[in-house]
Length: 404
Length: 232
Image (cartoon, rainbow over the protein chains, first blue to last red):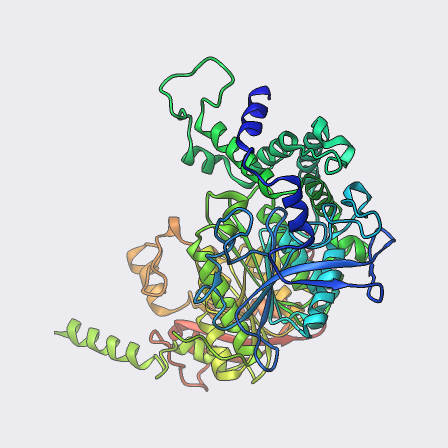
């Protein structure tokens, strides 16, 4: 632990300072829609969030009929920068293999929109945003948000942009939760839906992992009860450890072994210290360090909590099928064999509920050893399935066919 | 010489048994039993050829269940609404009257509990269409009688120990199952080895001897009741 901390501190010297992060939270490198006192957001927690703002990115062109919009929903620690260079990290977009010209979600054909979720830290209102009354960051005074709140805010964004109905909505993991919530809350606004590597509720094991991550953040003295902004501090160590733990859950045993095995990092023999002797240690430390550069610790607490609270069936007296009763939406559910965080059984539960509700649903399980993160990676079978599904839906929607 | 001309005849017939669009005749026979615009569930849909035929020629709202992952992924990539699932276990999850037709094409013999599957089909759909290989065909009878071996044909190429087909029946046997399951036989067609329909007015024993495959369209005699076995 001591070694990790030392390395984390040393390597984040060049990271964003507090002012930079605050700027990205309030005035991001993205278009922003601000909702004033006339448009409060009624939260599940029972309070109104007002004013608030949603940052988003778009790609491609909305057609005259406004019928070719696809919303991409990002996962826990991603953001709206799906297919452009990230303004903070300088890395390429997190789903560039899936979204772009000629990609399965083809920006030559579709208008793609990706909002930063409520509670996040890249320009949509969240704990890192400035409290409108105090002029200080919200911190833990920010109200607790749920996946349903995120989706409500996104619906308001689409209203603002004049998009009555989405041709499709796609997302993996927490993004998939938003997809399912959208289809349940606004069935008439969702023509087709792609929930990937996701579930209708967070399992006890998933909640447990999240709790470990949150406790790591809160155990860092720099967290200061969530008021680290005021002190010019940042709980880097805690957040890095949280990320390291979470990152393991996104991979599989087989993938870790294939990538790293028991190989040593830049050395031939063990040092008999707590240095990162093993490649896998070095890799995880790197994951932790690079994460704290771009993510707000309090946002991590809020978003993990939102996922924990997600239970779609609970809104329908425990009967999941009623969440999708007589839905007009066509679904394509995809899971991955080595995903133990959101296993295939979770996707099957979605499929059973959709079938019972009479929905038009496709379901494919893809064989891979890449674990939960497979939905973000180079998986040709996933690409074929997504483009095939979207082509079929485009035909049904009367959108022009792909130019091949 | 006899062999050669026989081979040539087979090839010509096999060619003729494919429609101009390339669809297999047995699938066309099944498709002909479905009306335009119907809502159809194809159980054991394989690579989706029947679903595609139904969508293209009959404008049906088609769904499929397929056991093999490769089949499913191929179907979904074609834009078909297909899920990975097992006829024996997953039909129970479908609500009553969800479809106009539930089709079981060349899959009955591979199910663990054919009667339960058939009963579920008649519960889920207003009508059921079942096509299956006829184990009463004369060539199969001859193989058992003269070679004393489990039969293997072009359509049933597996050895007994690695065959997915665990519940073979004859056309006569299937009719008996229909009676037991409370199914009304609306239409029946027997196909020759090349997939073409045999003449219509032939007696059952003739079909049972010369039909290599059979296609039945069934409806409920009355509200079908699924036997206890199906309600695990």
